[in-house]
Image (tube, rainbow, N blue to C red; front, side, top):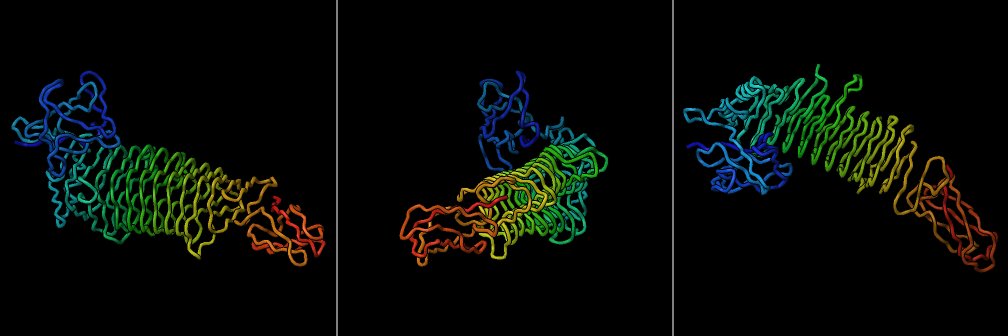
Length: 506
């Protein structure tokens, strides 16, 4: 008898039993029965790889992974430990003749429609036929079993059609034409790609995913989850006017363009918005890791980039946030180019060979919290660079290289007690050395104080803490900006202990 497939569908996030709404909690252990109450538990289940199991565990979103039920069973009562069970039907229901009728369900196995997945056959025609069939039926889900599916042509995707594989290491869509994208779509929405690997030929200019907008208001409800993208000549992900979308645990490696390129041009009234990137990474992309152009109300959380000239670039964006993100071995870790309201919390730039964070082109309302520079290379020039016309607030900046602050920057830094508010005369921002201490006058009533905090226009306050010798009046006799200054007394036999404090008037 046949085993029928359950789980991994959008409908499995929330299902509806006869007595009302029934939802699966995140991480819930779900068991299955032959009756809504009491009855016999089904224990002859198999996961996607055919491994026997007796129950199914929901993921962090409450979705169930793909699995098969006992022989001949087309529906089961699911029990997630609540007060009621819910009825769940198989995706591939049987026909009157006993065979599986994929046309009667929203799931299509691309192998059943001619795809070989043998790493030799051109599977583009078969998979395109599956996409078209699902689209004609009003939408559906393509199941991509383990295999390497060669594509000599780009796949043209359709709205309301999703694809779910057995994992990003085993379900591989392999582009072979260096001049074509792998998956394309125009004016589409409501698409999920999950558990797949999208690989390219390692050259050319094709992107793995390229969704563009021509006449539709936006490209809405796009979900990429547990997807590995590598060796594309162009971008890993290019989405135009993306809205209300999620990219979750998407990894882009060794692509010739940008890892994640989200574009919403400002020359229209439309714009990309309400999108989140969670746990994504970009490694070794030639142009940049993440480039958001004109996006609004978008967040990046726990994302990483390594080995790109630019780690993250926010280009004329509004209300975009980075939380717990990092850039390693990038010339510029983060660039905020214009726009308003960028918020960066807990950002780490490691081994930068240029500038860790660069604010430019009149970027306004930028808030930097807990930005940390770690082990910049010797050729690196600055930790934070704020160009003229930019406006930012900085709290808890840990810098190794000097800061170049030509914009309007309010900052509170750790370790040195400095607070800088433009237009006020407060403890200074220049240098990274001590700003307040004591020094003992020595021979000739002089002492040299070494501190990088001293500037050409710094004001140094002096007070005698402990008189010694023939007390005179101490004053600043000489200074070397960024290096040291000399205190000298009017009495050459003065050996007093002098307290000093550096202020920078703004």
